[in-house]
Length: 200
Image (cartoon, rainbow, N blue to C red; front, side, top):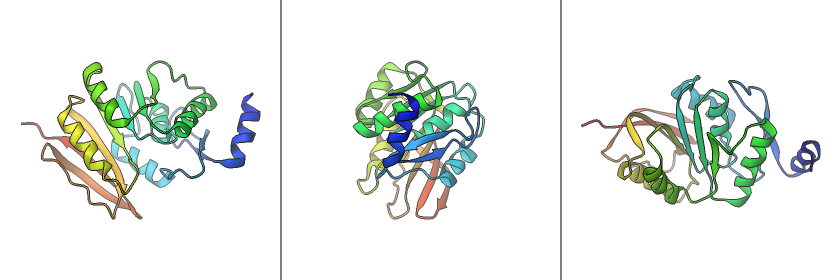
């Protein structure tokens, strides 16, 4: 199916969001109906915290959903971006978004269609540390706490790595002693917590 027909079929069930900055600024991508999106104000805030120019950086997005944050990181110049998503429909959407934007997801920009926790363990053995790790897990299942514990236990971060967690204000985020909070900001019912490993 061509991109025009694919886009027409998708828009019947989904809606579009836009890349906010960088190379692909203003370009549309798909957001599946029913997914909890990282809204524009939050995506803008994410890159206010992480920086608008990610040139030369490696970026890992866990629980990637539509890939909105990972695609934004690619647009802003990240050297390597890995998006991890377990849900079949969401993973399919990430691939389609890559196609829509003309981004090859087979090289330095990639999608891993698998469980986030199993992938973290594997990457700690097969991949060097990431400069930035972002995660926004499904709410109500205490997955943020488990994600931080795994980041603490596995060799996936270096001393200057940044970890950015997005979550629901109603869910208290327990911070392991291995991390220090650089800043925490609230946006409506959501929060962003920027962390770094404690250097001993």
